[in-house]
Image 1 (tube, rainbow, N blue to C red):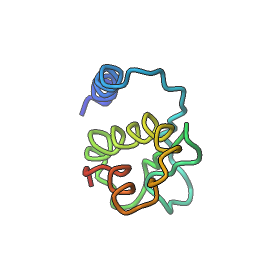
Image 2: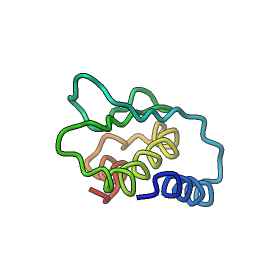
Image 3: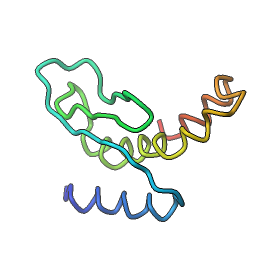
Amino acid sequence: MNLDSIIENNFIKFNQLVSHKIESTISMLFTPLTGILFGGYDNDQFCNVLNYNGQNIEYTIENGIPHELNHLAYKPFRENDPKKNSALGQTIGEGFTY
């Protein structure tokens, strides 16, 4: 797996699809304690724990990161949606990638 190429291609495609600028922090880390695979801390940041047990790293890089980027791009638009917490709102917010 060419990690640099995959991530670069994801960001190129992301920037082609999203018309507004996203300011965010994405952390890829190894931790002494693993409890979560992905974690969002705010509207503009998330982390991926690379040494999470049972993680399929290829799937995470190719599908999980773009999924999380989707949250970063569209969460600000969902904040004003009065139905954002409905079942349909949650389904649209999470997408159909998992």
